[in-house]
Image 1 (spheres, rainbow, N blue to C red):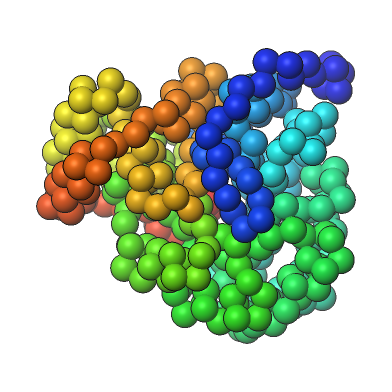
Image 2: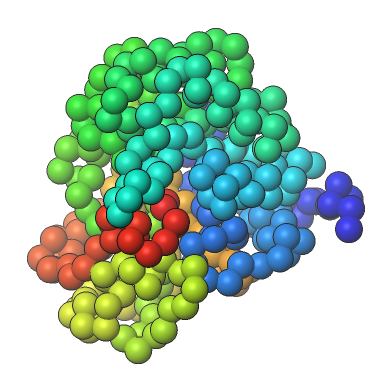
Length: 342
């Protein structure tokens, strides 16, 4: 199969948002699930078709990491977008968490090592520059200021256009930003996981930094399609995420009831309401749902057309604050059983 013959004349224009100086589709696509993390994965040709279908549906922002399937996810994305490279924004990550015994630790990459990892990612992605380069987890030993300085040099050399941090604290954001301005922060954020609202999101707003939520649908929970008796097998991170425990699914039903009420009001799906709520929080928020079915992609990207009135959003946000959420997703839970880390 010659992927270079890909015809993308049916490309649809989606609403856009800004990440640093880059203009990206208002909703991106998280590629991790195409290689591992959520059970059986599609074969290579089908995965490439899905990525290109995402582009045809208006998505221009694609997220991966060197740690997803040991670089295979980067290779997959690189091949898929090669014919449309100049029309898309690629985000990847270095220094992802590694398993040490029974827990996870950040990779303690020095500037020299970061450069080598950058070159490896460029090769796998088949490109001469990375649009957005994240530190996947902030090192506990290599000062974030040193990392920021190194990225600043890569930016001057044209190998990186913008950069950011994944899962940082507000203090780490401020320290790194002072050395080399950060364009974006990537952290888990959804109706079920709102810890970033305490100080990370306010810090981003203060500094003009975008926020890219991963797991914006809470690993699919907010799609409303998972039941208490759903069974997860093999390389599926949901086997170990506590919000998918049978008792917690039942306890969190009031959240799904609230979303359903707004589905009826807005003539939208559960996933669309969840994604639209995130985007309504701030104009610099760009969620990156995954999805391995064309229908699911169409649904997710359609959330960009769902707009709340100020009164609707205020009501939804207020009622969400009144709910207790049971279960979460942590690196610590996952590491005991899986090599899957977002």
